[in-house]
Length: 402
Image 1 (tube, helix red, strand yellow):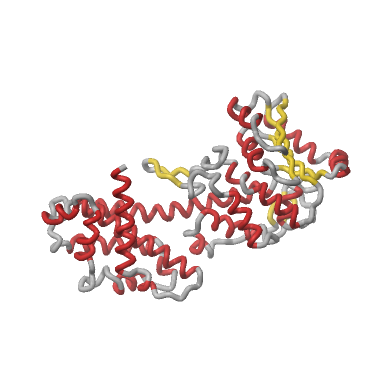
Image 2: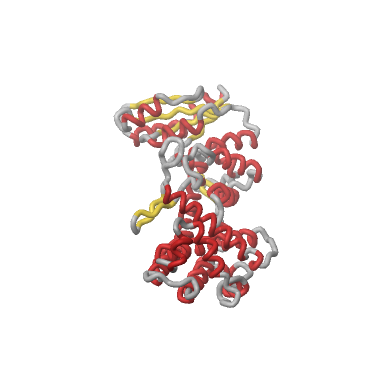
């Protein structure tokens, strides 16, 4: 992958060099020479963690980085500095979904890029055998400043100066920047607004005489604003990640729909020996879950899994033994079972069964993606379903208790 200028200069350079330069010599921005097409790879990306997804996307653009270099940067960036393991979770509130980008060290969405960008720059310097120090100039209206200072603090061979409008940021943001730790971080307030600060930074970048003075003093200019491609590339990732989260939420909607239906069927308690209606309902749910994961694209067929395991063939169906075992994990379940399955038990059992089928679907898909030759019936086993249902109900009970 090569990067070119938006202003037409024929210069073509690799990713690590664009990260060091920040802006093109003709004043244009670096953009990819072409954009990779990942439409045929989405099935392979949907189940990845945030860090793994980040690697798969960034390697398409930064192909002069080794796998080890790129993964090292990503793993250091998205570690326990973030207060949730998903890094950028998609959360449902009523009937709307929200992408949360505030779980980083400064609670600003800029952390999504500015925890990774400094590490990419540091690695780029080593790759290109750059001996000079890098001077980062950045303008901010608030969020970028603190996130950039935090990301670049105490890095070798890099200094950062952040310019902000004296009266154009909140008091909290100003205090965050002015109290920033790090022996390589500097903050300067200016008279004017953010546009004035940004224009001044761009003017400095285009001042060849000033850059020559810096070069004679062993400094190279670069930027942490969005003019630098290493600010933009990490921000691609969370759009993919949130889309895949919504795909997974489709499964959650199926679970809720069928749990409600199971609860309705058992409105009047039903005997454990008369559960055909529930069995039919849950077979239908499991088929929908497998289809939601598009399991048929992964060397198998949804009905093959159901017929060959436990769900469509009622002679092999373990429902009665399974429900007796699993209900023991539900407070009061054994006592209630002697009377009949009520709506609460039916709902929880259905959720647990659906959860286990979804988890086993992702397990099987990941194995296929890794080119493992495996029969899905060795994944969707009675024991695996039991274990996952048990773990689901144990966690459910903890939540209820808390």
